Image 1 (cartoon, helix red, strand yellow):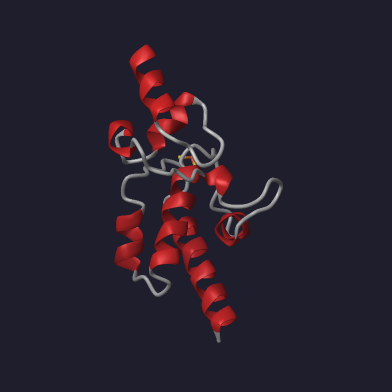
Image 2 (cartoon, rainbow, N blue to C red):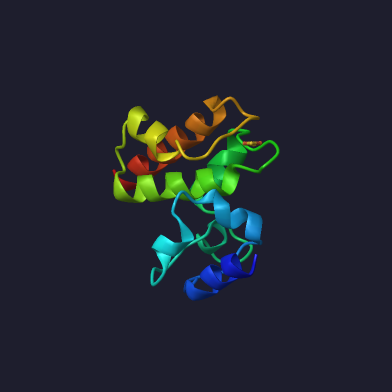
Length: 124
Ligand code: FES
């Protein structure tokens, strides 16, 4: 535990640090993130606000127990920011490190498509 704490202390977190179990949601080893800025789901928006991806998850009923949701939202936000017209395959690859045992993924995919469409409409 002390070694893990030391690793986490060595990483400069850009936003609030999650409780230790959530640090493992990421697919990046903590040791590989030393010196990197890290954005958690809490850092996507201001306090008390929801991002468009978070709102879409609620709209589509994509949140059940919530265990996988922070990782899903961070991964999909990153993909949508980097590749607004990402394909379904790219979406599936982006979340491949996050296992959801509740939703069956259909509603998560619907949330992704909702944000993709909303952002495309906003650009038009
Ligand atoms: S909502 Fe429960 S694991 Fe995804």
